[in-house]
Amino acid sequence: SKRHKVAVVGSGNWGSTIAKIVAENTRAHPELFEEDVQMWVFEEEVTIPKNSKHYPGDSAKPEKLTSLINKYHENFKYLPDIPLPTNLVANPSVENAVEGASILIFNLPHQFIGRLSQQMRGHILPFARGISCIKGVHVTDASVSLFSETIGKGLGIYVGALSGANLATEIAKEKWSETTIGYDPPMLDSRTPTPRGPSPQASTDDLKGLQHLDVHGEVSSVKLTPLPSDYPPIDHALWHTLFHRQYFHIRVIHDVAGVSLGGALKNIVAVAAGFVDGRGWGDNAKAAVMRVGLLEMVKFGKEFFAETVDPATFLEESCGVADLITSCSGGRNHKCAKMSVEEGLSINEIEKRELNGQKLQGTSTAYEVHSFLNSRGLAHEYPLFTAVYNILEGNNTVDDIPDLISKPGE
Ligand code: NAD
Ligand code: 13P
Image (tube, rainbow, N blue to C red; front, side):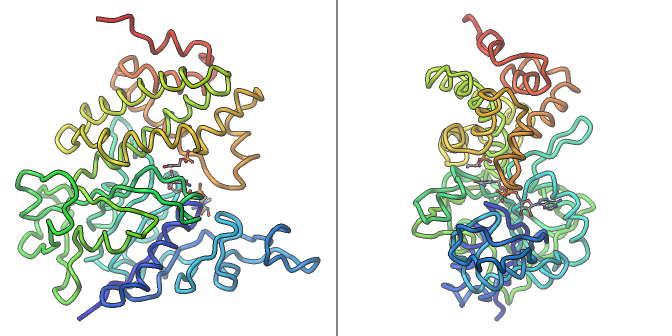
C-alpha cells in the first residue's frame, strides 16, 4: 500500500516551524508517510548572520536561501537558530515541490497565496487533500471567503484549516502550546449533524460515489476526486498524527469556518491592542479592546458564515479567545502597532524596520474586512474593526477608541 507524500507551501516564521513539526512526524511514522517533506521556499539571497554559529567569518557572502537550508538545515532569515530536520527539503519551485504530494500544507502570508495557487494548478495530484495554516480572509468585491475554501476551489481539492494560540518562535523552541484543526470534507458522515469536540476517529475520507459534491458539500462544477484505496485514509486521526508533538497538542474539530475566522480576525484586534498599549493606557484598556474585538469576531462569524460556523469555537478552542490573548501580548501585529504609536511612525515603516521580511496580516486584514463591511453598509456595526481601519487611514486617532467602541448600555 501507498504512503502519503507531504509538501509544505511556504517557509516563513510559521511556515518553517510547521514544516519542522511535520517532518519530525513523517520520520516518526514511516507506515503512513514518506520520510522526506518538500518545503517550497520563495527564493532569495541571504547571508549567514554574524551571530550565527554557522557564520563563516569574512568569507560570508549572500547565498540562495534554499541552498543554505539544505546545507545547514536552518532557515537563517525567517527562523534563525532553530535546527530543522534533515528530511525537510527546501525547493525553490512550487510546481516541483507539490508534485506527487497527496498532502499539501499551505503556510504563507495571505497576500501571496492567490498567485501561488495559480502556479500550482495542474501540478498537484487530483486526490490530494490540504490544510491551510494561513491567518486571513479572502475578500473580493462584496464577498468574503476562507482561504481553505478559495485554495480548495482553485485547486479542485478539499482543504481544512489549522489555527491556534501559536506564536511561531515559542513553538520552534519546542515550548508547549495547543492548536485547533478544522476538517470537514463533504462526505456522508459529515453531512449528518456535526459532532463537536475532538473526534480523531470520526471520519474517513472515503469519497467514493460522492464525486458530484464540491468543497462545501454542494453540487457544483468543482468535483472532488476520491482518494485511491491503497492510501491510508485522510481523516481526523491522520491529521492528528501528522501535526501532534509533545510540545504541540492538537484538537481536531469539524468547524473549519470557526478555526479560520478566529485566526484572521484576531489580527485586527491585536493591532488595536498594540495601539492602546503604545498610548500607554495599560492592561484595563487592552482588555476592553479585546472584549469588544471578541464580540465582533463572533458577530462576523454568525452574520456571514451562519451555515457553517459554531460560535462556541471562539470560546472553547485554541483558535478563538486563546489566540486572541497570545496575539495581543506577544504577536508581531501587537508589537508593530505599539511601536508605531510610541514613535509616531506608520505601522508599515515599523514592519519594514523590525520584521526582517516577515509580514503583518492585521493591517491588510483590517483594510479587507473594512472594504467588505463598507460595501454592505455594515461598518458601523463593527466599531472596533472600523476604528482600526480609520486609525490606519489617519481618519481617527487612538484617543478616539474609547468613544468609538463604548456603548452606554441597554
Ligand atoms: P512570515 O511573516 O515569516 O513572512 C515571510 C514569508 O513570506 C517568507 O517565507 C517569504 O519568503 C515569503 N514571501 C515574501 N515575499 C513573497 C512573495 N512575493 N511571494 C511569496 N512569498 C513571499 O510568514 P509566516 O510567519 O510563516 O506566516 C504565514 C501565515 O501563518 C500567516 O498568515 C500568519 O498570520 C500565520 N501565522 C504566523 C505565526 C507566527 O508566529 N509567525 C503564527 C501562527 C500563524
Ligand atoms: P502575529 O502575526 O501578530 O505575530 O500573530 C501570530 C499568531 O498568529 C499567534 O497565534
